[in-house]
Length: 407
Ligand code: SF4
Image (cartoon, rainbow, N blue to C red; front, side, top):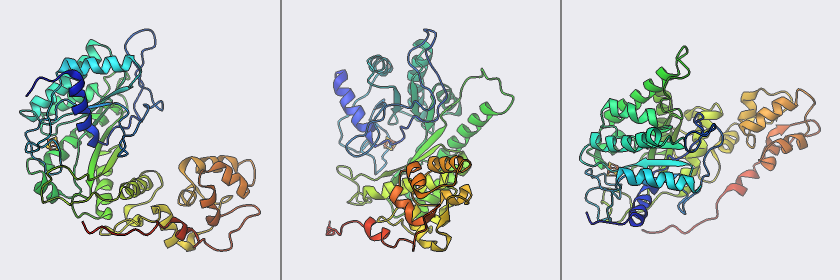
């Protein structure tokens, strides 16, 4: 490997990391440097200043790979061993130095570190753990750390990574096991699930009642995963069913859906075009309904079906269940309000709080929610009743017709 200066390495290894979507910092517990000790802080709710790359992915942290060299040959990955991409590798001291320097200059609030597989899972995981260890223990770094785990690494190394990181993640990669076997033959889906299970146990054992408050934190911001959408034939229903199973089995904080991006010199096993970005967006909306709005996957989309790109999944559900609307905002329970288009979790909580004090009018509801126009056809309030469920909503939401491409 040619000797590269640090700036060149940074250009290559931050670009190579842009395909990783798992970079949200929410939900961690507080580390801070009050009292004059330590470097940085990471507290609940404060989050990290998120920024987005032109392709829409979050790049707010110092988001880099330790190396983009990899001994594996996953067909969908630009870093696979057979790829012609320029390669680079950071030393451990370089990653630590960059993180601290960028942090102190206020450019970043934490580190997202992933890597191609060098030599073996253990070798790679150990190098990543050494970065996190040096930051936390040698430099008392209290900013956010997200480590992408190597599922083939030993449980001891994975556990050590989780002791230093706020969040850890292991990519499930594809919605179907057989697609993973076909497109990433060196990966072992059973090993991925086993590692996710170990993280879940580690998190639960540290947070069990009766544990000492001062016991070392273990991935306090939980674990997440990433699934590539559109690299195989899996329908949205199947993708969401897999997400639902992962949330249930491994108590994941997030499943990230990443639209497949065609890569240079791609394998003939891959599609030629990326799926519409709107598909990724609809999956995130549906995922939100599963986690926060009390919907089951089956209510949103059939296992073999795709989400409607023209209408958001909550509105689509409401239009299929017209008999359930309008909902009386002065009487309906929380569950019904949450299913009403235009009302989010926060606006429902505000409605429930305000209606203890007074009868709500439409203007009150519209002041409390973001989707003011959207909510109108679906609610009854003092002085307001919609004449009919708004079929007119749908044409408004339908995208402009577009000429299909032949290629
Ligand atoms: S193991 Fe990761 S970095 Fe290596 S080829 Fe597969 S997806 Fe890419």
